[in-house]
Image (cartoon, rainbow, N blue to C red; front, side, top):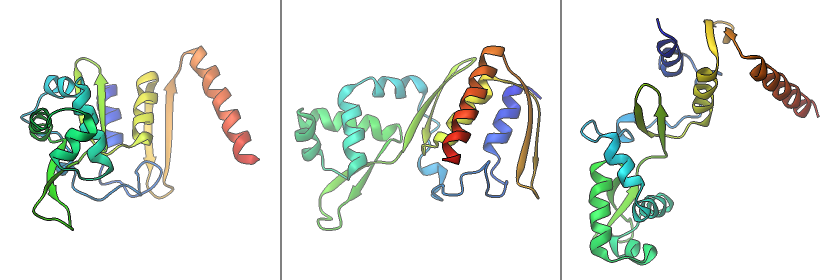
Length: 186
């Protein structure tokens, strides 16, 4: 098993009980509703995110559902520009149509993802979904260390990890640990 397989297995285990390795406050909505559709590719996603109007639309529609007219006004562009961006963002699975409760005849749009992650490795990969800074932090940590052994005790709800670490990273780890434990004790 490669290091990447080990990391992915630990971080994506969905059958683990709630605890430190799983996010027990995580939204229970289906992951399919926030995943980028398989037909979209990373280049299309990155191109869409490179466009300032598309980013403004995503942010505005994350705050509350908005009509194309409201988006055009908010982004200071024409409605036809907004409709082109909405079509692109919708085809990428980032925006969905919705209706407001008070006026169901008006079509609104809302952002359906909480976050996008760009992963650089053997290739470039973009993932859309719920933001989870804890998992992102663990991925960053595991990318920087050489894991030799990893085990999880379900009864104790504990993890034992043995890893190699460059000396300068060990110094940073000890410094952070001391600072965090001192802060918690105060």
